Length: 191
Image (cartoon, rainbow, N blue to C red):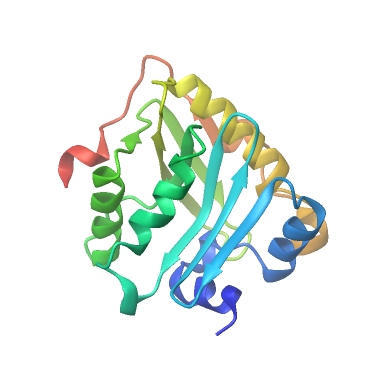
């Protein structure tokens, strides 16, 4: 199966970039946007000078529980940069959301409780709220995570959005909020 089809079957439509968008990122930013794929996984990520952003991490059902996800995350950790990703809040109708959070918690990720992320999906026209998790090898703070998210949103998520989707995504200051002093509940406490 093609790598995009694997992602498209697993991730909700409101989280997916179009195939054309992702292929353009790979072509136009080969030093920045990366794909690591194998028979049982697809990992799409941004590697900047000072952070890594995991755009998509998919491990097939056949390979779950065998350490493949751990190996992929370890490979990123070896780069000794903060690793940032978006995850869905726990949805009790979808057991994978809780499993995903447990996985990242075991891998040493923290919840960025001072960062809010709410984006209007151009596919569904619904606001999609995501939680931000991060791994900080040198105890980087949430301000570093926030700055990395802003860069990623502006360079990757909204890249040529009018061309790919017929309209622009919302501006970054509407989507990513840094609520210094107004922390939200830590979602990792509930799992």
